[in-house]
Amino acid sequence: MKELLHSFSGCSAVFFPVRRLKDGGTCEFATERCLRECAAFKNATEGNKIPYDEKVRVYKQITEGQIFEVCNSIIKQLSKCKPPRLLYWFACGDCPKKHEDRIVKIIKYMSECGVTQIGFTRNQSLWERVHKLGGVRFILTVEDIKMIDEIYKAGFYAVPNYKTGQVRIIRNTWVVKEPRWEYTCPASGWHTPTKNMATTYWHKDTLKNGVDGETNCSECYNGRKGCFSQEGVIP
Ligand code: SF4
Image (tube, rainbow, N blue to C red; front, side, top):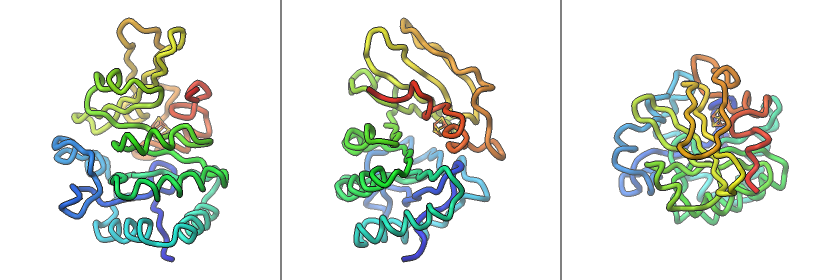
């Protein structure tokens, strides 16, 4: 099987095609604004400009191939990367509902094999099924911060900042004594207290920019910062 991963944010990443399903993409849950101002394009650098056809090839192989072969191929590719072995889901695109069971199986298998995984999705059901698995940090992207209270489930959420192409990441537990954590990926480095809630601040220098201002999840992983902080474990 041809390689399924491309480099992104210090990890090896799965890139699925962006667009609505009817237009040959995977962004079933995206808003119109998200599709119009897609950060996957805004933040693309020379290193991660993956052609549409290549993303379609990866998407087809992952969603149509034998699950065991797909997992083996990913693990084989990850084993060539320098530690930590980090798998990033949906550097662009998302998991459509029709492939959710399969993607959950792959994520579970990877987790059992000790692969650390991070991913952003707008598929709430996928997020609920995987985000508490060992070594998995999955973040649910919502359009508006108010939606977090409506969903009312402990976990990591991301709210896009369309002006900068970055996301504001919020960890919420609804445990009264627990602080609500809020921070932004390294590229912008601002951190805002949340109204009426105890908030732990990330000083902007604690999350360093990666190369060319790109985010770098492996740096967060190594330094136990951002999504990989000790406090980031969802009870
Ligand atoms: S805070 Fe760090 S680990 Fe989390 S998404 Fe941003 S770069 Fe990746």
